[in-house]
Length: 506
Image (cartoon, rainbow, N blue to C red; front, top):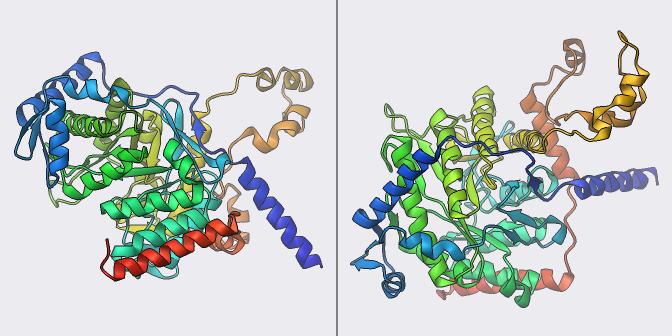
C-alpha cells in the first residue's frame, strides 16, 4: 500500500513537472547582430550577383525546372538563374511566424518572431554512454532518447533522427522512427526527407494521429532539406521538399556548409552563398504552394585547414549565426540554426565549453529553432546519453537568460529593504522566504555544495551524476495518453507499409 502511494506521489510529481514546462520560449531580450546596414547591402548584392551570374543547379527533377521556367526564371539545362530581386518577390508569401501543432495542443510551438525553442541533435549513427562507451545506435536507443526528450522540460521538440537505428532496414526505418515520436512523446517532431515516399508516409501517419482535415489546414511537421553546397539542390531533397510543400507542411532550407571546402574561407563570402541558396529554394517552395511555412536554415562549420576536419565552438561559427539571423529577419523568414555542437568524443570539458559557446551564440542571435541543442558528440557522429541531460540543463539556463530581468514591483523588493536593517542580511526576511524557490536558476546537473559535502556524498563527477539522471528518467518514464484506435491504426500502418516495401512496392 505504501509502495503504491509512493508511486502515485512520484507520478503526480512528474505530471506537475511536465505541466509547468513551457512549450517554447518567448524572448524578452533583444537579439544581437554583428552586421550593419552597409554589410547587409554588400551581402545581399553579392547573393543577387551569384544567382544572376552563376545560378543554382536543381538536379534530377524536370518538374522543378518547369516550375521555374513557367514563373520566368532563366533555365539552362539543370542550371537556373534569377534576375536580381526575383527570388525576394516570390518569397513574400511565406509566413513570418507559424504554429507547428503537437499531438498534445499544450505542447504546440510557435516558430518565428520572438519565439525560441530547443531541439535535439539529428542524424548520429553512434550513441555513447559512460557504461558501454561508443557503439552503433539501435531502435532501443532511438526510443530511449525520445523518452528522455519527452521528460526534459527544456527540450521543446522531439526532433527527427535523434540517432540512426541501424538495426532497422533503411527502406522502412522512417516508419519506426515516426511511430516512436508519435507514441512515446506528444511534443512536435520532424519529418523524413530521404525519399519522397518516406515523406509521404510521415504525412500519412500524421493524418492518422491528427485527422485528415486538421493536417490539411495546419502545420504538424517540420522538415529540413539541405542544399548540396555550393549552389546545388539534388533530386532526393527536391522530391521531399515538394511532398511537404504541397501538403502545406513546414520545410526548412538549410545549406550544409563546411567553410573552406563547400564555401570560400571567409564568413562574408559564405553568407552571400548561403543567402543565395536559401532565396532560390524558398522561392521554389512558394511557387509550389504560396503561403507554405518556410524557414531560413543554416549549418555552418569551418574546417581545420590543417586536417580537413570540421571544427565547432569557433568564433567564426558564432559570427556566422549572428549575421545570418539578420538576413533572415530582412526576408521575413523564421531562422533555424545549430546549438550545442562539439568535436569531443565524450562529455568532458571540451564538450562543455565548445557546446556552450555555440549554444550561447545561437541564443544571443535570436535563433528561432535551435537544432542540435542536446546530445551532440564527435561532430554529430555520436549522440550521448549523459550529454543529452547535461545540455538540457544549459538550455534551461539559456531560457531563463532570454526571459530578461524582472522589474515588477515585487522584484524591486522595497518591503525587504524596509525589513532588513543596514548591516543585516536578507536570508530570513519575508521577501526571500516568499521567493526563494524561483529567485535564482538552479541546474539539475551542477553541484554547488562545499567540497566537504561533495566528498561526503561520493565525490561524484558531473558525467556520473548525468548517468544517474538518465537512469532515473528512463525508469520513471510514463508514455503520454493516446486514443487506442489511433494507436492501433498507427501500428497497422507501419506493419502494412513494411510488408509493401519488403515486397518491392514504393
